[in-house]
Length: 270
Image 1 (cartoon, rainbow, N blue to C red):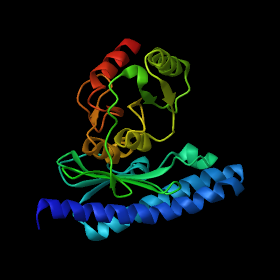
Image 2 (image 1 turned 45 degrees about the horizontal axis):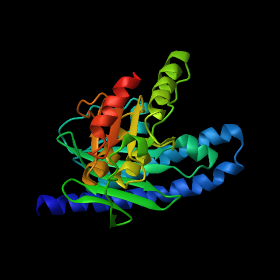
Image 3 (image 1 turned 45 degrees about the vertical axis):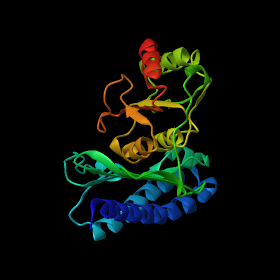
Image 4 (image 1 turned 60 degrees about the vertical axis):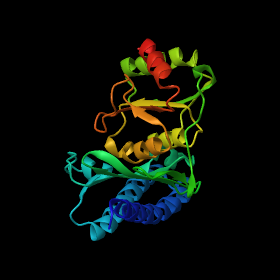
């Protein structure tokens, strides 16, 4: 079996796992409106945990020798160090605030790294029924149709996505809003969808032209989306313009035509 067949097998398995977890999220999503406040927190935690268990159990049966890093297991003190071994990196529910509010930008993100390189990516939004996939060297797809990044070459006509983040101390907020303020003079408009993984997919399919975020949860937010962006012809990099580091909690993405102008604009916004 060649590498290509092997990777196709990994992708098919990841898609199966994401679809199964998607049903759990869909059920929880439509329950959120009926749950009392304390119960809501429990519902999110339970949905998160149930999805991660489901995905990892499914993958471990087929690939017992692989390594696993998940948002929930890491939060519970599990090992999250990335090695060269094939490693499945999973965010079982990206967009938890959206989930709580019934805002349909929620997804499961599954990424496989091999020798630390993001190789297979699956991001599935079960509410809007959008399945984004990418495999190293095999292109990127949305619901099995090929996708590619936008061909926009002017910052001033570009749609920018970022996130406000979870920290609410004054210094962090000032830094965040000052950067946004500076960038808003240079782009067409701004979006905050509430999901890092779906923002990356937005770049991949050309809905968004520019995206950056710092201080997000961990590699599980970007492991799947990074492959999908690259396979759609886009670039994933550090907001400073340096190379992307999957463990750094810093990411930026765009099409190749905008990258340099975007990095320069972000530098001026510091």
